[in-house]
Length: 147
Image (cartoon, rainbow, N blue to C red; front, side, top):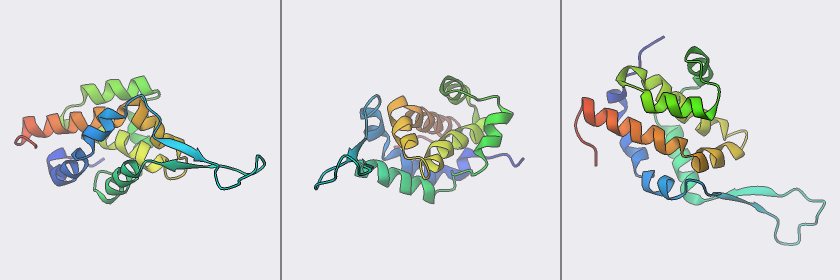
């Protein structure tokens, strides 16, 4: 497996760090609601409506080189099965473990494309905040400070 160097993705990380204050302020909150207005009956199916900042974050993340469609291999390789495992792996990640950080980011960004609840879970659990903070810290240690 090709080793990922976080310093190669510095610009991508910087793009996503713009959203860190918003993500931090929405930990443990619901960033979506079910649309059921305009005369939808009880037999109609409501659909989730997401915060526009969340959608902007997801779209920008998808455009970066940080997305890893094979994130499930990273999870199995590192014995990551639960949210607590994810948090522990992110907190302990070193510059050599960048595939864990991109894997966690990818799991929730790409997973939310087919199962929208995943985006809400990522925000409310704070896993995106942890991953972005860790990426920032590693870049500052190995490169130069980020804004």
